[in-house]
Image 1 (spheres, rainbow, N blue to C red):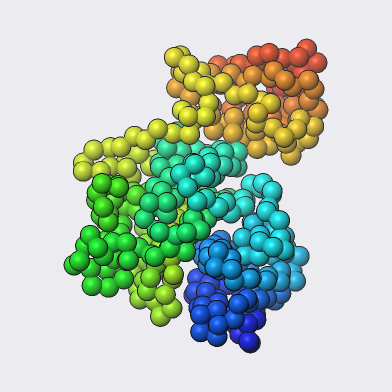
Image 2 (cartoon, helix red, strand yellow; image 1 turned 60 degrees about the vertical axis):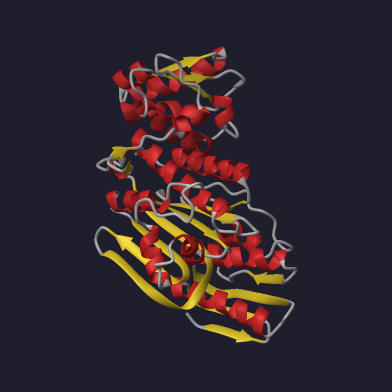
Length: 411
């Protein structure tokens, strides 16, 4: 990717790779710290491809510059698809907070990057990510949800407790449907993993050694703060699922996958802060239970379902429809709710999914078919009868749902 820097303007052409993201950060550093400009301009007019693993570190660094009263101007890509991606993914707002509003986009493939700066915001960000995943993917088992939530919690918690980033961190989740993988990227503009580990591990001689230690069991800067299993467990989850994990921090780059093994290399351009990009497979053949084994014992974390859905003693989960939908008039509104309901059904033991329709005065026929008709078709009549119970229905809503299910039954 060609990159041009003239005065305080940095111009990006073509497709971004990981190295290109680092070069952009280096050009920003050169403009502000060496040339002493009080502002700079990032011109992505000719950019044709970009991903969150490259864009979030750039956005994190721009957030730090805004904190230092350095103005950042962004020019969006000319290509319409790329332009929408910058806006929808929230990259535009995070890079140029003055010119672009925060994204409210919610899609199945990409979701907006979320900023968090304390424990409360971190918890809210993780909850948003899990909510998006439950509505976007139909192959999760409960153990998988637990493992993925644990990994995201641990990596974002590292930002709060170890990164020393005065702008907090960023997280973004993407769904790669064809590969049956999700990717979460967490980035910060803090001091970096090597700097946080060295005080507690004086034997570390280089940044590459620091990253190698970071993914080992029980390695932390301070045992009173954490047990040091966050990156280790996240690494195991990515490997066991057939995915991949990348970590850039300081002068080191770590990449590990089941297929290609572990590689750690020295960077010529330092990453001021840390970026963790983890891809996790979610095909039905994968079981992530064995990933969370620490000191020979399997760790079973509390999961999103336990904390966000009412689950009674019989194992029934209450699903309040009015709280899950933005509207009840289209297939588009029903599709993510069906996916979430399907994931919850798969997480049931002996209980049922109690769909509470209180506060739902009317649904369209297309919404009823997309949610209940297709759900009936997907899991079959026996499982639908045994696993789904609708309560508090308006008579008209009941008739529309019954009709949708009867039409699908004929198929």
